[in-house]
Image (cartoon, rainbow, N blue to C red; front, side):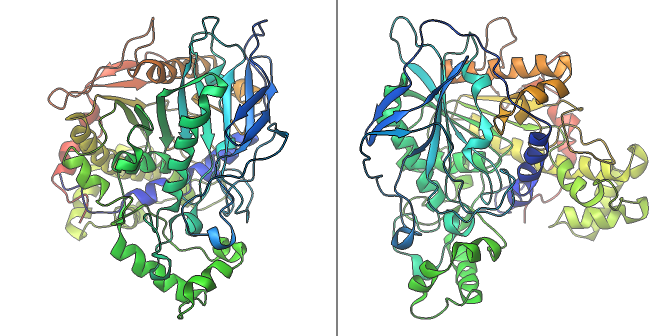
Length: 535
């Protein structure tokens, strides 16, 4: 299977989390589900830049809007993050910091804020009686590297579990042009083009220095992320700058993917010229642009960049060579990943529908890189007559192509890293209104892990009893991996360590989640091995 050179990940990660999470949050409210105990942890904490006053609730503590680096504004725009200045007295940490500049997305509203390098620390309400430090999960949000923020992901369901004993940190990082623009005028630092990755590294270093003040163990950190967050994690695994900053990783629905500096710089130079900054003073011109221009006239593509001092080689090549950081990884995908993109074109109520006569045209648009004869093969292997609707047939072909390529990467990963694999397979996952069943679409697992937008009680009301049980199980697997480096919670079937010669994964369903070895047959991966997945 040819999977190394094509940039298919962008279409996978763009759009779904911004819209789907926003729509799900509309369905949601917020309520604690834990218990109060007398052994409360304090609401005042001292970090290396000053004191913080957080919020203590019935089942957790939250310290929100903590700056982990100086505001990347003015001359700091498109430069590595710098240390945050100490503040006098006690800083209130009860509200989220500004999300990074972006269009309408995960948080629902456009932002032009550049002072956005904030994180949030969620802890249990109580501290262990024996004084032991708790393991930590650092969450990197999705959103195609163009939208999203850490505060969307309420972590109370993870930290408030009686059996959990974990701390969760959710992080903002620079996005879009401000986070991932490579241009000749900006080739001034080690990570040119990867400012968002440098922010993530700065947040992880902040955790190393400060998480002990919250009761956390800096030697037991798991970095976790979904979609663009998972793509970022693969890049972090491929840079020596991340050595020692985390001891395990969770990668949800995001492959290893990056673009070479030569391509990124050429695209960035073209874009700079389009916004009037193509002259000899291009750097000063770019730094003087209003943030609104960078949001409203953003580059068409936003990618992790390799070929700089931070990320010297393509993460996919590092993966193939067994050169990623050697830490345990819990990695997976959703059964119907590409349903959301099919929905955007053909599933919105009152919008257009995909007719059988247009199915082949839709396949050609979705499966770019395949020639006419190969599209004919796909249409024969996924005939409209086999599915309830043409949009479902499109979803199935599109998804299978993507997830089979991801599982090729998982096989490479498992040769060096202890690897555990899951598939989210709730065919009735909470979803926006649609004219066709979206199944377990990209991002559909997030309500089973977090209170989206800190809003939980209405979401709990929308979930069926089986979905609530599934959410409880999944949170147990995630927290157990954070605690012990393997997804093996007591009383539940352990996810097996992945073996490329006898592949098996843990399939999450509303009823009868199971260990299964039929991923390749279910997604027809043998068929896709005969096609060029990537040019």
